[in-house]
Image (cartoon, rainbow, N blue to C red):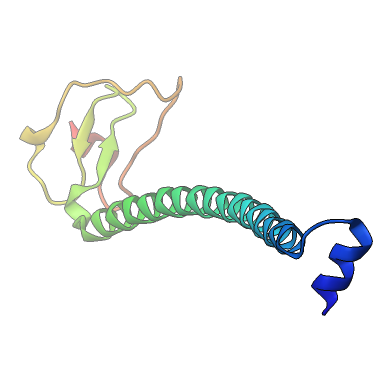
Length: 124
């Protein structure tokens, strides 16, 4: 009845009024779909960035865990000492003096890596 009345008012056939409303519904639905699609794209981009950030953070944490694990597993004898007289680095603790190396460290003008349990000249 409403279609008939509107068609008579607009001097159109009822089928034309019907098609006009169908087209209007289709356009409205398409616009809403486009809006939803844009919203989903933005959400996807945000989640992708968040995922990348979290992956990077996870890699850093794994790296720190491995580093901490490695540092905690070092025996006391594996600590390095630096003799202030000859500035050579040696394995501190109970290791033999033959483990000394002549690789200089360039940390600063007066670097002191001395094992408090051993005499400074024992590294040489």
